[in-house]
Image 1: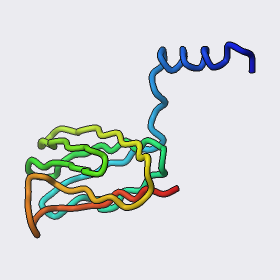
Image 2 (image 1 turned 180 degrees about the vertical axis):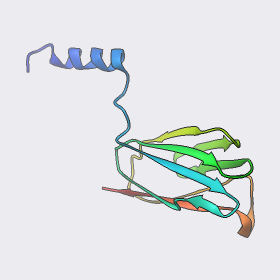
Image 3 (image 1 turned 90 degrees about the vertical axis):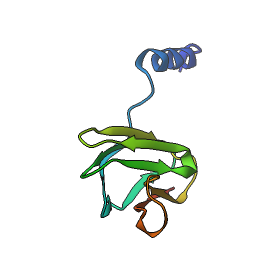
Length: 110
């Protein structure tokens, strides 16, 4: 690569925006829970989550990555997450509490 390659790469990112997500998944919230209940992504890769509700208003909260979005009936909410650490991270609906709260898990692999 020539001496101008890093500058050219930076200019392309500014013009074209960040790279698109590596993967996307549809997530449906309902009173019965999240479907699918487990989402998997590799550390450092962006996962686009398209969240809808099958019944009433819900919320998608992924506390480990400071994400919280309201999900209204008839609407799709796009959530992009790029995990910088591996592990299992719970997500939940922040509108319910206790045993009736619906939950799921984001698994981040190496």
